Length: 164
Length: 338
Image (cartoon, rainbow over all chains, first blue to last red; front, side, top):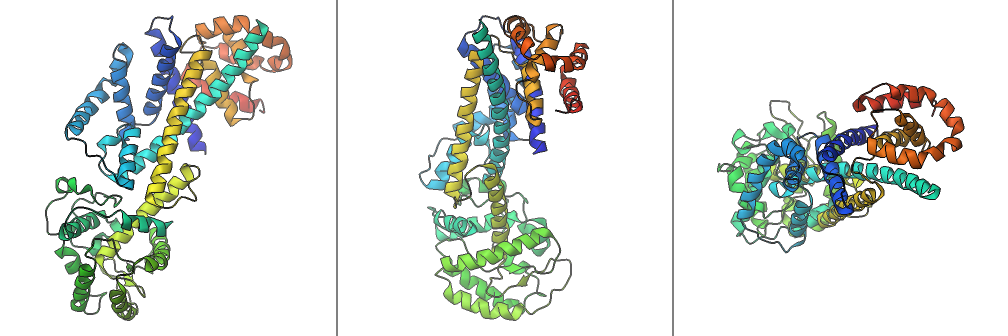
């Protein structure tokens, strides 16, 4: 499991720097939703960045995040390259038309493709499963880190509330 | 699990294509999917891409023409079986044709396959184990091939006594009651890859032990990914609520990360915030608000610890870059005997 810990550490490092940069580029009175989106966005970017760009999902996630943060100059800078690469492929795929599948495995694979970022671009089922497994590992790391941070924050939050 | 996967493979193989198209598509699937151990066994033209195409869905033939060339795949497997391993390849060809015609409804094969018994590699050992399992399992599934089976049984029992000759090809010795198809070999390779991945999946996704079949596994994966994504949403909302600013958690994250690898929980954080009080690297928002309000109250509670943490705070007062923090922190915590 030490490799998993390394994954978590990588993620933490990247997340902190991303949060830092995001924070500098945005004016401060943010409401809860905006904060949440910033956190989620930064953690997604961090997760994808922690995984090198050798997986499809990491690149797709970065490009997808780039579309959402069009106003934030930092994100745009970082993500520009990846975004252009993925955008065209996504468009051509969508244009090919949707044929919805009814039978079990086919339907589930399509569902999975929608869940995993960049999954729609993968035609080979073998690679799709591989990407999914990789993505799951990194998702778990993200969840674990966020959970511990939230736990600490809730504890310290309680203490400050008590003392106020 | 293999048994169920194969059953599932069978069931999902319904397509709208005609029988011959299905056969062709199937052959196209089979042939490129070979690992290098079997590479020498087939002629080069049949190994078009070496790309791995999984047999998860038989109906993805839409992509096939783009990926593969249009070499005549059908003819190759028959011709490429080296004569040294087989006695009377002419007979073999005939038998193969029989099994193909019987296979007309496009169901995926073939229990019977040839396996190497002697050669080397762990992969092969695994494969042979899996094929033993598969042999036992799939025999119970396949009904339509009884005649072909009997023929092959008698035949392969003869050929199983043939010694393996080591030439350039990788020769596979037929086992009793197994097909000697090249198709079956490819099939076997692909199925073993699938089963390998299924094992990995079972380790990764909790609760997958009892699930058999591709659809069930996919369901589990989908549910797991969805639940993880929802958890992330929820946690990020929670973090957003608790913290006044987005970049809140420098100290805490490092502390918690260290703490998660060592059995301490809350104790590190006040110490680190103490150090952050005078430390410029700490986020101004966090230190200003939290330190001024909550953490001052930590100090009397943590007197014993703060005394021992003085070396820590002095360390943190040096202008260390954040990227060095975790290694330093880990060293320090390790030295503290935590």
